[in-house]
Every structure is written in structure tokens, then in C-alpha cells.
Image: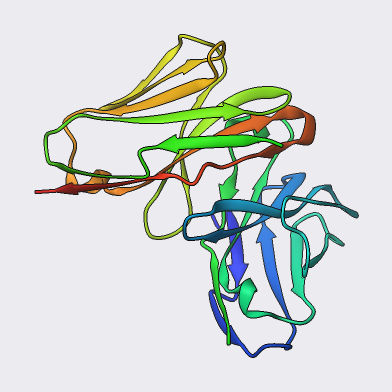
Length: 114
Length: 111
């Protein structure tokens, strides 16, 4: 069972470069989320989606864009990376009924912007 | 704005000790409270609580929710080195279909 798969697992970017993080889930979940995790800050919600073709801003959306063209995929884009975006990024998914029971998380992407 | 405060932020104990981790929260449209364990990678689900005074147990771990006072505790008895992790408290807000995570309590269990 693959669950939630994130690619890449590690990446180093130069300031100003762009990249896309891919999240794929094979559980037919409606809801998908992108979080970032920083020391002393906990997990913070960047963007989320409650269904194919829909996205919404979370707590810290600035500098990021997302797309949910297919139900199983949720993409997180950085158009012009900044050192402040150095973080560990987690994707998660859940069904509407299961959202209150917690998410299934991917293994994370460690991004460093130099 | 939703708030989650966990205490202590870090804790070092010896194997066999009992620990209590605290979580207080303020969220709109509260539906449930989740506890996660995070080792080196992604958080893994431990408990979900929805009703006050209900104690969930799973082996050496147990948790209680007080919806009136807006807090939860996670107890771990007879700690083992494998319990070393960050423990995250996360209230679920049904109105926004999202979970707000606390910073976590970093637990280190030494032999």
C-alpha cells in the first residue's frame, strides 16, 4: 500500500529558482493538505483542497501556489524560492468522513534554499 | 485564530518513568482532538477523542479530553526508549475541515 507519496524527498534550490513538489495518494481521498514544519513552529497549513479542482489558503500561503487537477494529485509550487522557505514539507490526505480521525501523511520533502 | 499550546516543550526521563503531556486549545467548531507521534519522519496517528472524560487507552498510552476546560493530556506509563519522539496535539475544526497542530512535546527516554 503506497498511501501518500511525496516527491522529491530532498532538494536544494538557489534563491529565485522555482520548483514543484508532487503529492500523490492512492486512497481515493477527497481532502488533501500541504503543511510546512519548522523548528519551534510546529506544522503549519499552507494550502488545502477539499476536492478535485478546488483549493483554499491555509495559515501561511504567501509564496506558494497549488493545483488539484486530478483527485489523486496535489501539487505545491514555489515560483521564486526564498531562504525563508527552507523547511520540511508534508502532504496529507483524508476522506471527508475520516478527516476528524486524522490524516495520512507522506514522508516529507526536505527543502533547502540557499 | 485557532490556538494550541502544548507543555512541556521538552522532557527527558529514564526508562520506566511515567510522563504526562499537556495540551490546551481554542478552536472554532471543535469536532475532535487528535494525538500524533512523530519520530524521524511523518506524524503517525495515536488517538482521536471527541467526548469529555473519555479515556482512550492503547497499551501504555492513555489520553483524556476535557471539552469544558479545553485541554487534553497524554499519559505514557513504563516509558521505553522507543517512546522517544515528538508528540503532537491537534484539534480538528469541522468548519474548515482542517487540523491545527501544536508545536509538540519532545520526549527523550534514556536507558
